[in-house]
Each structure stands twice: as structure tokens, then as C-alpha cells.
Image (cartoon, rainbow, N blue to C red):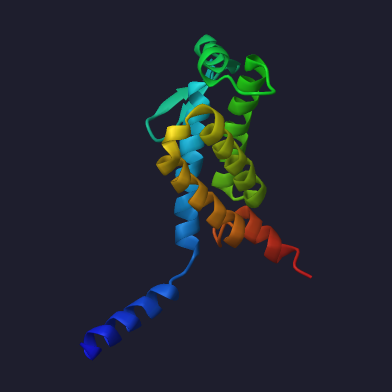
Amino acid sequence: MNAVLRHWNNFTLRLAQAPYWPLALLARFSLAALFWRSGQTKISGFAVDPLDGTWQWGWPQLSDSTIYLFAEEYRLPLLAPEPAALLAALMEHLLALMLLLGIGSRIAAIGLLVMTAIIQLFVYPDAYPTHGLWAVALLALIVRGPGLVSVDHWLAHRFKS
């Protein structure tokens, strides 16, 4: 039994020494794809999704269904439906892009965490298992940063004093 525990302990010690950057890159890519795609559902006239090959260049505008959802289903407090929908669509695109590139990553992750909290509290309160997973990944990026494969990392080392 001691040999099994010793091997297990050695295994977990090696896991603890694994590099962080692949996890951070996977978290950034996954969260960026999730929020980008969510933002894409809110607009028409502009669609970019390299994962499924969608490329439609044009001037983005809020879709009628988005305004309807914000007015009738989401009903956020303190914000009228159209500005709330516009803000959500804009932030989902901008913050997802920042997260993907790793530029202003912590700011982007904080913004997406706030959006996740708003969605959890006011829109889909029963979806806490999903939102909890998003929050954990976002919190890891906030606490540990975007990792080696990021503009933030390059800038930090470029301008290190």
C-alpha cells in the first residue's frame, strides 16, 4: 500500500509542475469562442466564425430577435432593452477578441465574469453549473494571467524594468 501511495504522490507532484500556459491558452480559446458565438447570435449583417467556416462581411446591427429577447425574456434591471442588447453584443465580441489574443486579458476576463454574473442572477438562474464552469476558468485567468502565449506576456517582458 505504501508503494501505491508513494507512486500516487510522485504522480501528483509531477502534475503540479506541469506548465500553466497550455491550460491558460485552452481556457482563453474556449471562453473566447463561447462568448464570440453568443455575440454573433445577437447581430445580423456580420458573421465570422472560423470554426464552422462562416464569413459574412458587412455592417453589424442588432437583430430584431435580440431586441425582443432583451425586452421580453431577459428583462435586465436598470437598462432599457436596446442599450442592454447593444452593450452585450459589443462586449461579447470585444472581450472575446481581447481574451483570444491575450491582450488586456485580465480586464477582459473581469468583464466576462461580470457578464456571467449578470446572466446567472437575472437571466438564467437555473444554469449555475454552466456559469460556474465559466466563472472558474475566468477566475483562473484573472488570478494567474493569460500565460506565455499572449500579447500580455510579450508586453510584460518587453517593457520589464
